[in-house]
Image 1 (cartoon, rainbow, N blue to C red):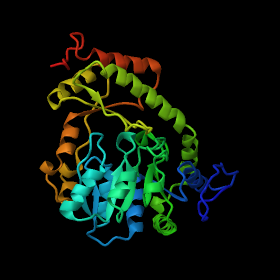
Image 2 (cartoon, rainbow, N blue to C red; image 1 turned 30 degrees about the horizontal axis):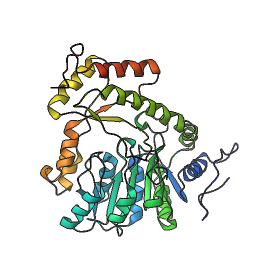
Image 3 (cartoon, rainbow, N blue to C red; image 1 turned 180 degrees about the horizontal axis):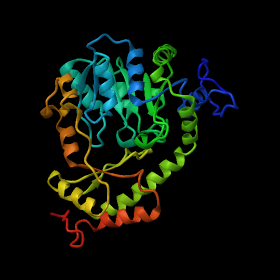
Image 4 (tube, rainbow, N blue to C red; image 1 turned 135 degrees about the horizontal axis):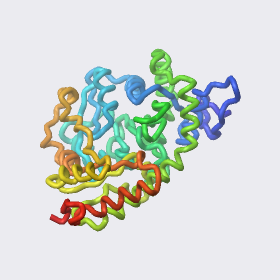
Length: 353
């Protein structure tokens, strides 16, 4: 069995024989899958960002630049570590873009740490972000990205363009039997620090039982992502007939993990649309509260809503449709037919105005 504790990249995935450590096997498997030299498994996304930020050894008060659509663990761990929050605007897919990063640096100075999120499982352009902030530590929030691939062909979660990446063990973290996360890096010093910080906190170390469950789940990733992509295709077809509704599609040349399906409609229409979806038994929802508007996290960031116009508009217009809870073709067809009926007299919601 190849070990990521050596200086050689892991290339073999192996389940240990009885008595072997499932935790080490999981770390080796994740490193091999994501083309990383080192992997450190922890109990939760919060624990992953805690050890990652600690490994960077930044002074208290250092600003971490991210977007207001990032996973809450990104900012919770930052605040817990005495770091300041800085939010940049997003592009049409809800991602931190190189242009937004450069604009923020022009106004506020070059950031020391940048956290880029693969929102909803769609790969963001880490190559351009790396070029836009060559002196910053780039950390990828790939919690929902396992199974995706970037435009350069690298799997989402590979630290090829980042100092560290943080990947959710299971694409549907909320219902995972082994909820946790893995920190991946090619830097031996960062790996050693992450491992030391993980092992100093027993509550951060993933148990052998959860590691064993996660190893089983890894074998299902490809099938799960393929199922979600098929569901997304049905949603695309159902929404294509509506001039005021559009899918938030992944960038050309990338493969999304489809952690959720995002669609955008005019803000004035969204409330009625969500209510109609609920009456049809479809679990559409809004995005979570924007982090810069959060009553707690907003206190740690010096930003006004007017400074993030694309973020505000994206949040006001987006609805989230399920990809993980729609399990069989019959249910997919029912949801797609319901979406296709929106805008007709039968559904009672006019998307055409």
